Image 1 (spheres, one colour):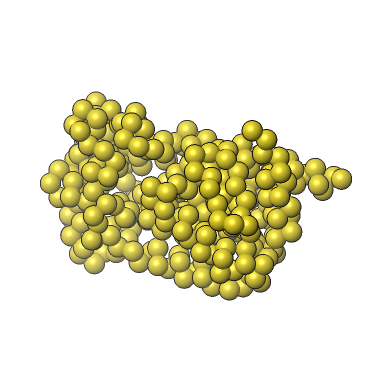
Image 2 (cartoon, helix red, strand yellow):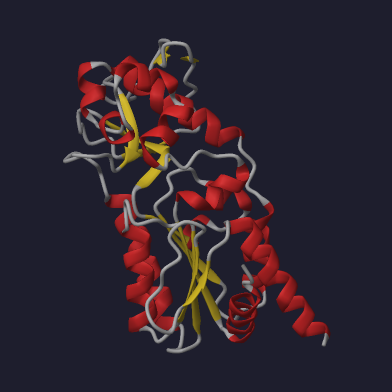
Length: 282
């Protein structure tokens, strides 16, 4: 299928914009080698232990495990923490930073990913909203008042055959209770959203600095199963008279007037960059 017209339109919109808002879902990390857990089969490919136990992603990503079996809970999240720490962001992240460097208002990121890949790629932490939290930050299971703490000083060793963490588990310095990731899980009534609220307030302030019609909302790999990013991007595009560009190989459908590119994130970003460079050279 020929996507050249959509690529050209996206390149033109990005070239003319004063600011770039990037919305990112799990598909953004696929080209870096990260799993996106699309459906039970995709999750079980990454975690065969969970298939043997009959656990899908929604049942595994549940805070109850930190109460009933913290070693198993940290086996799952410790494995993910270690994976994200050693994963290098793909070249598409650098393209976004390069484009933003030429914009008066730069870029802001709104992501449902908890992997910290945008910060690792060089996006300033104060320009990222992690709407579902971050695996690189922890909170006390007892809500003892210690607040949200960085995970930098903690290392979790995981037995990959059983998906169980070996002791010691991450422990609160204040009350010595077990720490959990500062991530919004399924059925989660105890997630501390204070850090995310601060991020959202910074994004709101930034959006008000950008003139209407001078913003491009570039959505990458955000699906409908957990539609936080899609809904946010569509809402901002409508409210701010912005151009919405949706990059998604599986669910590229867009509202009227938006641009759909049914490709993976890295391929689409590379083609857009090539078109922008061609226009500059012309």
